View 1: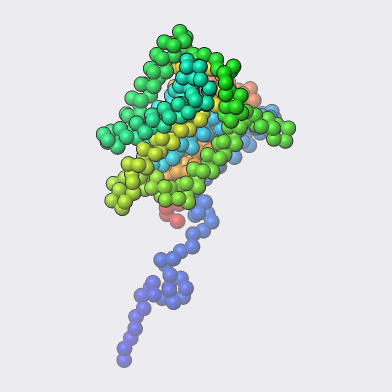
View 2: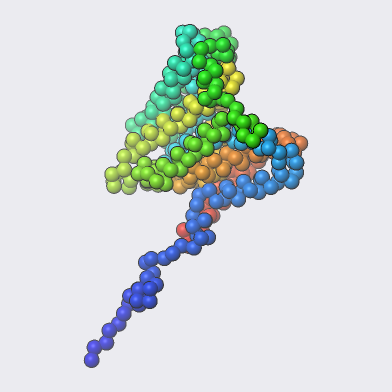
Length: 353
């Protein structure tokens, strides 16, 4: 007489409970999202300022908050993608100023239509990003060091060239030049929504976040970004074009820097050559608060948008509440530390489920 012994997995399969195929709970799926921690924080900040600052709840104030968040968020999207890819860009803030100065100075000095300067500035911003990425892949040096060098070079170039051409520290006004009105409509106009003026950068920001999210979650390029940031050597071994992916991510930062630079130029019609310094840390913090890990391979574009929104709500909420604005810097440091810890805990808990 023979006796058959079935394995636990076989028994489970016979009962319709194969251990190899598990259905994740809703809680587990939520915890696995990089932006869940920042979303909870955003709700808490919103409720706080709604309670302590009644002005914060009005539609014009919320439109102003959205505008403040958008100018950070457009850059934070590209910086988040770069961080997911495992790299940093400390020149991101200065690239904004460089782009604006290049567009205004080139067109003004040669008496050209402003759109020519805009295109030249775009090519320059993309070239800076390509240079950062190429040098990174060529030398193997940390992106922190490479982009720090670019930061100082661009800062010196901005100040030196502006002073040489104008005799001061700001660019010449371009308000009366050909193409100004059309460019202002694209980069710095105000759209009326329900009787409330909303800056067009808010809509551009939403579009960029949507494109970045679709790229990360629905395209092969998104898989390349996560793979390159998680383990570049392993990604390269399975055919991921790590070199092209990382250079492309740096160029994306350059593109967004150009866009924000154009917004600043056509909002104020001239640019201070010393601007942008320190903004790179704001973009990085927004991405980290939104769920990006400093080690790469993890994060989301939506999270970066939530991180930027937290910045917008806090910076203006403090003013509406009548608090001392000097406390804002303390808030930035606390928020960065808490977000890093929360993101790590959430990620570890999700991996256990």
